[in-house]
Image (cartoon, rainbow over all chains, first blue to last red; front, side, top):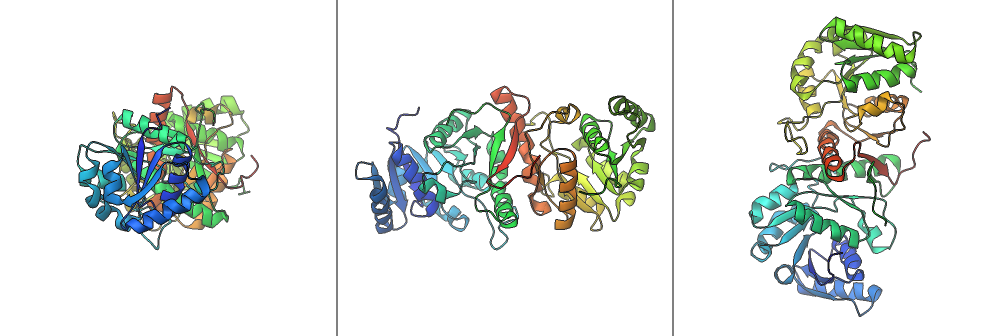
Length: 225
Length: 225
């Protein structure tokens, strides 16, 4: 196991995606920094999560920049419309670190149609913005975040793309710490598959009248969960 | 169930992908036309499959053009290097029909890296070549075809993209006739996800030391298999 001594920043940590991940990692013993454009919002989210998790958890609220600066690993959970701007805000603070990009390049209102950004994927856009000294690893795009907050077992695996193989292995440990199964899904060029799966799963939800269609990798021995 | 009165052409039907699908559909009672550039090769494949399935199955061997002409539904199973050329060969014969494209745009030797063709996917390339009067529906990209030939239960679902919703529903019936579970995965723009998953699954096979990693859709009631 990765040492829970690691500090994880969640940029855009006041949204439901960020909250769900913060909840799971704080519960697993990691120090979690909730970032927001507005410090007060971050503090409100910390207060909300402390109510559920107790005062003993290691969690702080601050601006996105401060969180990115203080953390060992930075997780980006903002809507696609805020992706580029937010990355520019934290670019200096994430140099030399792993940035986990959760972004799906959805183009409302056609969210069930895969949209390929010019760079090939949202993760590749992030890599282009941040430069070669940041390990951009994409993950978690297909998870229904309400479930992260509700202690359900989540019937959905996580595809982990980008960065070096070692960086992906580190992210897979964080996936496991959140109670999920992660798979090394290869180089950053593969991220469009994980990102685009979100549109397919939203479409399956609509068409089959369910709320959290997911995917599982089959044919490989799973770790015990 | 779709009436097994339908006739299915398998273009490139002498490859292992085509053979596997031909085997399953012939067994399910469909009339299967094995197409090849060279008629004698198609006849040899028919003889080979008849040895396994018996003489009662409805199966014939012929050229790709003849097969496409005579069939109700046309299935394309050729390597990506032959994709464009083969489509041009059968363009006139498939007008007004459903063409099921099984092609994955792999670029050897980097087959574990997703390659996005300029049109967005191999299926979109096919649609551009064939024109608007053909329902190009992509499917079966992630199936290990050896398993189709071996009567195994296959632990891998099929994502069905492209064409109209009705065309996808028709293809899903053929997926089920082959013993698999198919899902309506939306418009043709989504095909790159199904195509690209093949690279991710090849990578997982290599990295985790297995031979047929696959995917399953979770969170939705499955039909009985």
